[in-house]
Length: 238
Length: 327
Image (cartoon, chains in turn yellow, purple):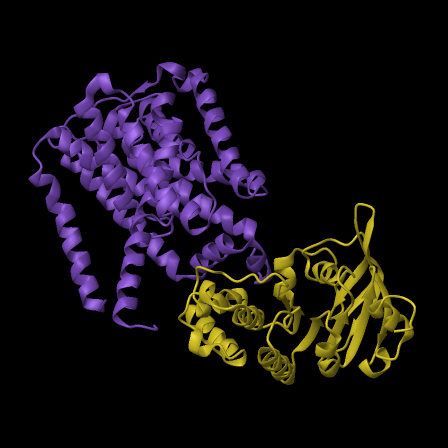
């Protein structure tokens, strides 16, 4: 469904993504992990059109979407959330989701309905008339997901949807991710906490210093020596 | 508020707006009313771009002047009635706004505002040196007696200028109301709140800003045409002055940016303050009116950036909280 071939992104002399390739199949939950600064968010930005990679290609449903503007990528069916939450503070929760829903409709009624459905999935229905700015961080993260869902995306990319949440909130977030996946929507997740990502992912990509160091099923990833080195600081003697 | 109370309030406000000029016999009072209405239109137009879409323009006099000049030139050179000139001016202003918007919307925040100031200054200089349209001497509009609506000139009663402006104001408010409720209105507000979130929702942010600017410029130019018909004399300092640009922006911000009835509140306060302080202080106190309303703006910016309507809302919310604890 989504394929990256040798994506490379530089910031000045820094190689944020170095020749990264990956393949996400339809219906999967695909995890991307790596220590801070590994280039996870940069890779997200390259896929979703917020950054242009210097080299490599991004292919979505057989279509080359490399360097397409972000809004068109959303229309093509990839929606995303942000690590630094981006909600529309002055709009209500319902209106936030409606903005996403307007992606494929001009009708307010249709948008309202789609927004309500999305809010249902992320369990924010009871907050729908509150201003988005008044939500707590966990709710804002869920609202971002609702907006992404409301766009009617086939692939939803979640950037640290669970970081900074309490244990209870995290359990709920994981359940939401599973619920969305059960609707047939493919999911790509970024997390830097392994325990969160491993149990839900079908496949995991590990980045370190911009390079792909492993891509496999979670059970193999946890035993991969290079991954252990990257996470535990080098010599494998921890 | 119940729906029918809203209707009654709207009807009452409308009736008051219609009766008001008949209750004020002095020409100066009528002049003040006309300016209030003019700036309500201009503030509402600015609000579409600045208030809803979050792109602060300090160069709206460009569109105002284009409207004034287009209808005046068409009337002087070719005898075309100002109503037609007005629409042509609106279209030209829209085209110019898109030409200005294409490069400047790449700039965000303060940089866009600075660019619009520069464009305002450039346009005035251009018109000052453009002989064909009168240059620094300006244009005198031909006088048409008879108070015919088609000529948009009224001598027997200044009230008619007010009613024309009131009509345009109501149309503007209606248009904004419809936009607010539509997809476009949601997109405007999304672009204002978060550029990233807007892009990620499939919004073409650059195009959305251009649409906002185009509509805003069109309405601003129309007001400019009426103003030219009211003054019957224009020159670049009259219609392209940066003071007009600032005033347009202040009117919207004082009332409450991004609020339907913000501009009429802001314009009532600002115009009354500046016109009366100027009249009372006369030549000796030149500029004092500006000091007064400058102070007002500083106060609003410091204590209630959401404007007067924002303040009203806050007081209401506080009261509700007092009634229902833990709400």
